[in-house]
Image 1 (spheres, helix red, strand yellow):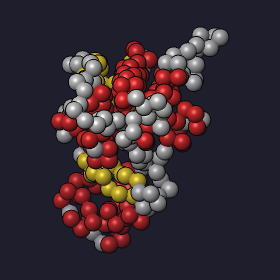
Image 2 (cartoon, one colour):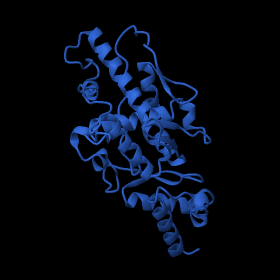
Image 3 (tube, helix red, strand yellow):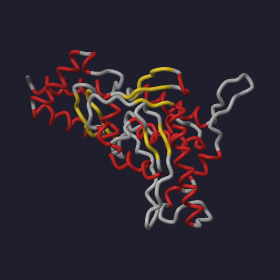
Image 4 (cartoon, one colour):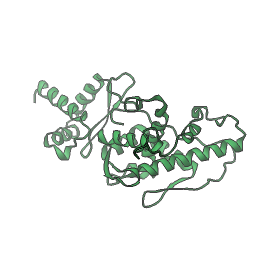
Length: 271
């Protein structure tokens, strides 16, 4: 093919990458372009160069997920919590929801590398996971004598656990609809946002909403969030049973210091 044809093909592949609900198995042209990235090094180099022109990074080009793009600090294509959670008071809870959904869906590090693994999360279980983590942080702060509620070696928490606990997990309006300010309503909005961006799929309405993960989300979590994030809740006594439900124990105290607390993953074009 000519340089012009290759440029057009790369642009076409980028356009597919901006459509997170579309995957190569559902589109023959998309599948062909993905295959070219694996068989033609020059074509793959053109794709990376074109992505850099948009201040984006190519996270992966995968036969299941397609083109997965990541954001740089300069890009105008990055998504943030602020874009899908309009009220600033709700954003800390949404950030924790993003973290907990990833941690619950891929609790074991090997799940991130298992191409057949499909994570399953529910709104109720996400809320229970974060609530347990905040309760454990509170217990440790009390034991350490931190009057302000923030462990001395974790100033980034900024009493986030207290903020979460102050918000009702559920609430009903006068006509029995879920209150939009409740924790689970915010978690639901985060899950729906991930669904609309090709990261989750709706499975049922049980437990406030049940969702399964996609290959695109697995790649995003693995490449952009990292396995360290997924292990941090384990230090707070969170484990996941075979049925995907979180269970909680009180971990043994460490000999010195306080374990790192979970932090929210950074935003990217699809998260």
